[in-house]
Length: 254
Image 1 (cartoon, one colour):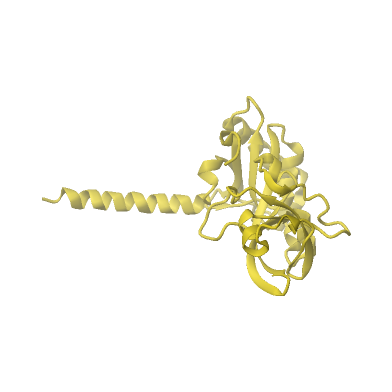
Image 2 (tube, rainbow, N blue to C red):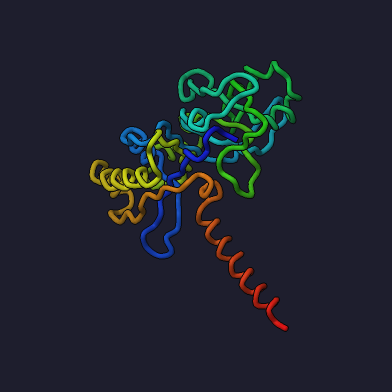
């Protein structure tokens, strides 16, 4: 439920050998693409992670998404309370957090004084800065629960997942971008393939991290095709097609 979803796309890495399986991108790869592409008006990365969430005296496991600053403006997403800037994550101040509408209702009874409330994630305090509209459950669709909250990507530096920000082989980030007016999907794909090749020349550490055998190529997909992880989507599509063929053959038996 966002404006002009046909302008949205996702970027994955795909192996060039074997069955061509998909992965996400590393944070350092995302930074390189973000700073050098001129075909996207906004470009954001996100990663879904389980946290130990403590509200008051109750601790439970909750699903959160860590996102880069343009995530909410790329879609864009509205709030029912507060804002979605996530501006001070990673600073000396208490980092900010945005609640899902469901968590706001379930744990805070929809109270308007929730802004500024403290929630601890794996022991780190976060301050509630906003509540999202009820229809939004993020981009990625899978069998997990939708996210309960969102925090800024730089907040990972405060968690056990900090190495994701520096490791070239940590290609686990999902990426969403919005095309500029007049730009086509083929145009985005062409530029990102060029940037992919150039990155290995500009950033030799990328190849060293993979022992010189980096085997992935950037792949651009329309967002609706990419909302369910492409590798799973292809497997399920093949399975359903096979079942349909078998059912058709059975129905033809006199």
